[in-house]
Length: 239
Ligand code: SAH
Image (tube, rainbow, N blue to C red):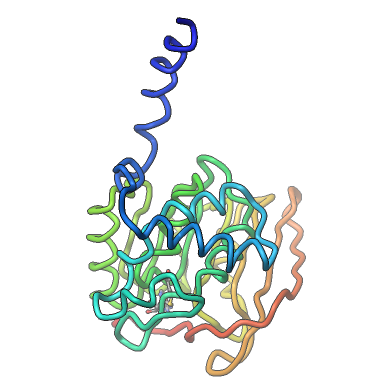
């Protein structure tokens, strides 16, 4: 009896906060593909953060790749999304999510919306996400897709992410999903004390290293280089 009452109390509290996509009964085969993705691509490479793993399991990645590339949605590879851009390899999305230590309600800026997948994963891990995309068409498509899938905690804007999103700053974390030879100063400024920024830094046309920059409570900056990655370049000038 008590057990039954508990269920009735808990259910309305937990379900409404999940995106619509996660509330649907998961009768589809893609759920099994995501289980495999987590167990074959993420756990063996050391992704351990539970919010990150749950988000990777929840977000329907196949909705974020072009129809003709659906067969690649859960493969261990980046996938072209048009305009010369790509949705990153699942492991890299999970790594960047884990590195910012996602927690409920944190404010995250993403530069490089692309398909909207990284933003959706951050939101599914509990964050509120402000994401900027330099190609107008990609921004519009990502916004529509995220709305359709029920991600109400992601705000997409068309613009040049070099300048960040000053009206919404400061951010608890910043994720840059395109490479450049240095971190744009406006982004470091818009990071809150205690915040973390992750970005691929290096030659934007060849290889970069993932850099984790931290701002301590007193505003002091430290950074370290992590693993080698290959991202598309951070561009200048809106398109
Ligand atoms: N995070 C994306 C993939 C990123 S690909 C996803 O999950 O699908 C990098 C994206 O950054 C591309 O869509 C590219 O158009 C965008 N981009 C490049 N330079 C930018 C800039 N200066 N400001 C905002 N977006 C930029």
